[in-house]
Image (cartoon, rainbow, N blue to C red):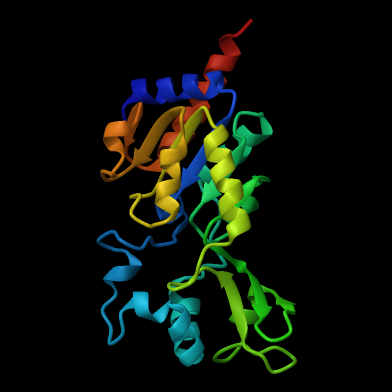
Length: 250
């Protein structure tokens, strides 16, 4: 990893008045959660029904048992722990050097690491509600169910995740857009920027853009700084550089 680029990012974060982070599935791969589109990703699963169809709204309603069999074994990782990226972002927020984390992930690891201002564009596996009465249920209750989990009232319980054919939460979307528009530094990490409409929001940043990803993205040419590699390793190195810079300040 380019140490000069790491030091430059550390300086950019320290100088920024309103830094914001926008992340995707690559942020959580170091925690043992597979991404979707890489060679080892979820969408490479071979089966009678494509994963994209299984995690659609219509499939959930028509085949809830099959949906939950796939969902609980392929998309939910309750034992996963925050990695160096999650922990660094939480620490930066605590230091006043990260204003918001906007994530496409549904695993809740940013909050587990300690981040407070987290905007989950695609929802969270940690929140579940009955589609009939609205009663809330824990992830533990969903995971412990045989087949599709049902509410005490008999209604089907749905995870608060955005499935295919569903719209993003307008309130979360509005808040995320506002944070990006206010940012003078937008750090984009662990995402190929191919999932819309979420990926289009990053174009609203009028400040500097940094991209950290293992593979090329559609915005690489617009980036003020490009770091290729593991985002966990990058943020671990960035935090060390920031601490080193701080130790030299009078």
